[in-house]
Amino acid sequence: MQEIVILSKELSAQVDQFLHLLKRYVTAVERGSRPEFQLGEMKIMFIVNDSQPDVKFTLTAPVVEDAKGNPVTPQPTLTAAVVSDTPDVVGITFDPATLSGTATFPGKEGTANVNATFTDDADKLVGSFGAMFTVTAGPATQIVGGGIKFEGLTES
Image (cartoon, rainbow, N blue to C red; front, side):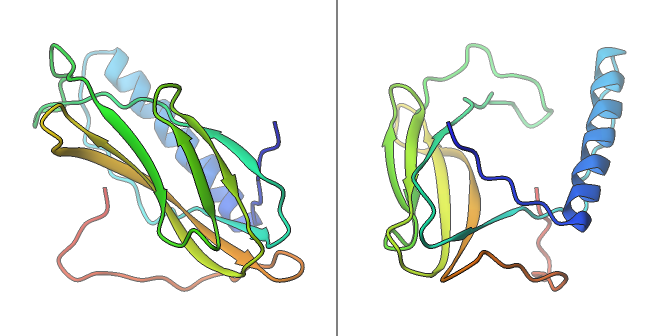
């Protein structure tokens, strides 16, 4: 299985910092506390060439929590879906039974968001997560810095 891993030095340092904070958080939870945990501005984007071979992916099933952060019992049955907002840049095939699929790169440069959504038995959205892609014509390149902030909104 081929994986795409492109890390700038800046992103690599952010990943290391995140892993350090995550270890501290897990240790605190194991000791019985529920510390406040807030991520800073860590953003991950996959940057690939438009001739990138197909890539397999697998979702990890999420845990549904109540407003206090406790797992809901019993866990609801969730249905997963994965879609690309720009399928001619990043195409997606997905099998909900195995929570796995394939990302394809049909040869068009551009950007795409791949979103995984989880709905309950009443077909109500329970949660989602996603990945961003930049597909370049020619060698994969990147930009460093820059950002976008939305007034009154907090990332989670």
